[in-house]
Amino acid sequence: MAGNMNTAPPEPPETVAADPLWQAIAGYEFDPPGAERRFRDRLARENGWPPAYADAAIGEYRRFCYLAMTSGHMVVPSDEIDQVWHLHLLYSERYWDTFCAGVLGRPFHHAPALGGATEADLHRRMYAGTLASYEAAFGHPPPAALWPPTADRFRHAGAQRRVNMEDYVVLPRLDKPKRIGIAICVIGLIVAIWTL
Image (cartoon, rainbow, N blue to C red; front, side, top):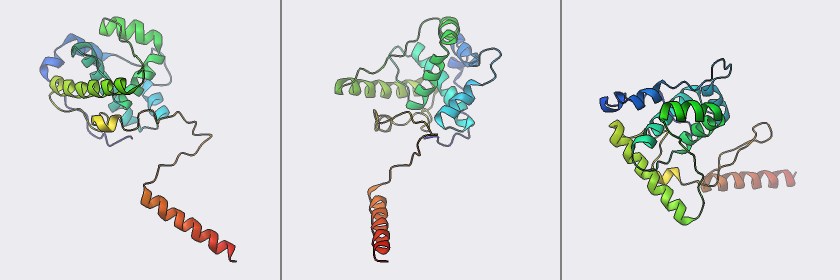
């Protein structure tokens, strides 16, 4: 999930950098005054991300918000950017009163998917449009580590769950050859123990 994000994204083109809206979004401080726990640290901890990856995700969330206000169409975030948005929404007073009203100048609602094949197809098309608008606005494709291609973005839609890591051990799903190999080893071990 958390890919390599060792390099900062290129600076936005001058047309974006000079836009007062971009300047306001880029200058927005996520941490409330006096906060001891930083927004970035909470984002990293809750998602199992290294701090640098959380920083990169926050930077891309800023770009997503800019696109939402300027692209002229509905935008759909990647899962990583959506995680930043969800956490930002939890700081509800700061999100609505400071960010939406003061920075964006208007409400920015997060609408859940309604479900169904038609809705899924619509979200895929809107996500592809978001990727195209990103490249048009910022002069380069979005970083794949945070903005996967459309097919990858929706491959596991609906399969994600929140898991308390204190109560469960989460293991990656193995491909079929590895599962067969492990099954053969386990059967061999059972046979060996049985024949003792």
